[in-house]
Image 1 (spheres, rainbow, N blue to C red):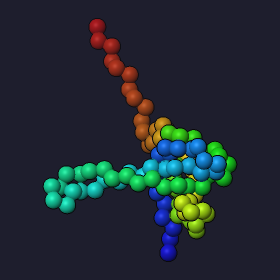
Image 2 (cartoon, rainbow, N blue to C red):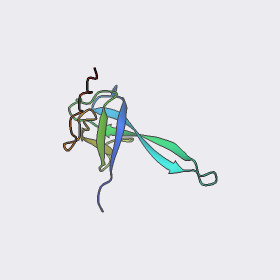
Image 3 (tube, helix red, strand yellow):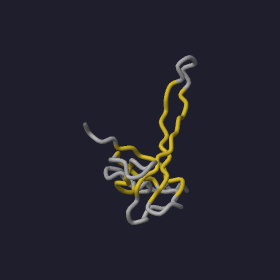
Length: 96
């Protein structure tokens, strides 16, 4: 069975070699049909203590490391990079 991979935001990096990652998902309300956000926090293993709070990371399911930790950090997701196929913005034409 493949290991699950989730993407979330680090909300705490206070533990030694541990980060807490908040993963949000959007679900449709069963009665009213409105799209609502559900979130869950996962404790993930960060061997190098390289991940800081506020960063977006990918985590992978693994065998239990401790009582709460059954996930490990794969890598940091770069949220500020532009897509490779994106064309640069054209400068506004000067009228006059």
